[in-house]
Image (cartoon, rainbow, N blue to C red; front, side, top):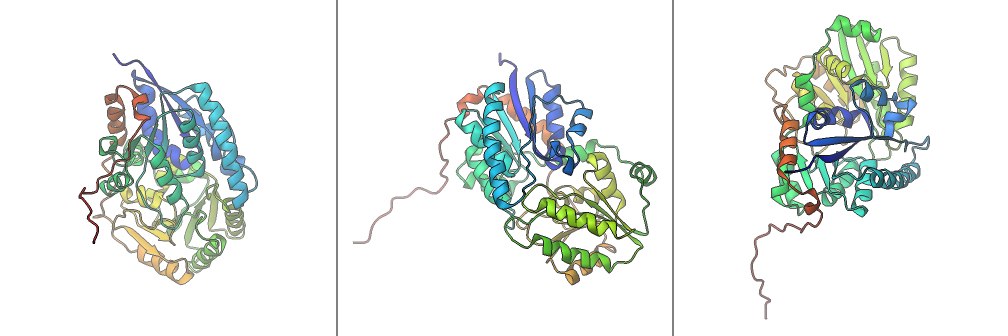
Length: 393
């Protein structure tokens, strides 16, 4: 008889919470597990909408809440945030003593939690490993997390192969699909009139949903944003522009400041720090296209049969649906992509990230492992063909 086991999950952004929600719900409703939820990062920041409120409205009671975000979003400031995160995660994980740490993605604070867990000998289950984002530092963090994790829940078969290529045992690498698609399947969308009333907005002939994050492997994120603004200004006032906030990477707060300034001087534009998943998904269903460089445009938007205009290199390397239009961060290219998207038929596009039942697969896999502590001592899985090498004499 396997005892009830404590699974500690971490959410640090509105984005990872949406992707984790179906899995958190399955864990919370299971008699086999007790959920310990740590809430941190932008969830506790007024500048990013204090989305911890949404988590509590959904019925979750965080086991711990702490802030790691400072006003300094320079590279040095982010490094200091990470140092603070390692220290705080060490204290909280030592207190909670979970049987397993469940984390998602590739953010620096998630890497910090895994570093803390490694010192405390807590096994780690990682979601979304094996993906590529060549244009972002997230790529480095993600692969580092993979090497420090013990169970891997990936979103597609190509990513599974990469995780194994990194030396992880195939028996511990599960292709479950994206749990974000679970949430789409489970969400009842708002009609356009209800959504407009809820947000106090008025849709126009054309409508675009826009999210632009810092490009962490490049130094010109703000100049790329300005190119986007130049393209949007050429669309005219019959195109309604709905912006959501950038994340808390370096230059994130600066990007949000520029967006707020842009919106303030244009009657056809609005800015929301966070829409929440119901309003966000509903908004996708009512706009012509989703514009920017967010992973949501790659993972979730194709499920709505809507085009994504993916700007720049931030998401370069991810598996893509046919509904995604890639363009360089130049105003002319962005404008052309928007024009193309407005007449694009995406009805035949298929989302390559699963069928919307990822959470159940994750739970089933977690149930099959009798002793999580046995995962701590792992060997490098070398799948190269073995052959004797002879030296030339």
